[in-house]
Length: 232
Ligand code: CTP
Ligand code: MG
Image (cartoon, rainbow, N blue to C red; front, top):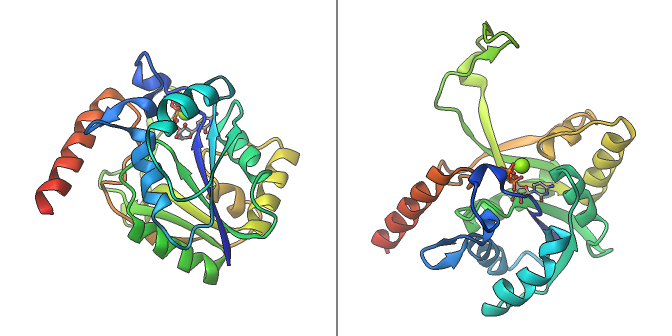
């Protein structure tokens, strides 16, 4: 089975408010994006890596970031779009024509483990659409435009969705095309497949698979890496 990984790293990192795009900031002396790529690079089931970057960062990323490290797999650089959904769709156009399974992951989630990626690929071979997530810890409120709480969904049914999200290629491309047709913009890929009426299986990942989004996430990130080091 040919498996492609699409790593979405074409965002602007606005909420990080840093001078360079957040994914090039270093954790433990290594850019966040490299941490992410290294996990994917070592998974034997993955045949190619498509890295989605902002068009005007492709050269910088290739010359100043990727060139400093060695990867076993071919990394194909593709330019992204304005929204994450568009970036993933651009990536889909470049996957190998034999790809049966597509693993979509955020470049800004460097703490994903090989174990979770492998589990989600196996599950996608059975279920065709899989999301990795964790049960939410907080009670979640639905709030209206005037800041009044209008609903409190039953927490025992709520999960926070992360990436990887893994799909059968045909289903994912169909889901993206339908979203474009309907002018629908989703914040993850699972929702596009849910809209097709296709069942999406949730598998439990780890709470430390955080997305590096705001400055305090860097502190959390260092802590996660330190804990891992002390366990070796
Ligand atoms: N992403 C992308 N293309 C976009 C927007 C986002 O590939 N047009 C990627 C980001 O690079 C990131 C992932 O999707 O790895 C999750 O997005 P997010 O955490 O929101 O990152 P940014 O959009 O870069 O950050 P912000 O929203 O704060 O600007
Ligand atoms: Mg964003």
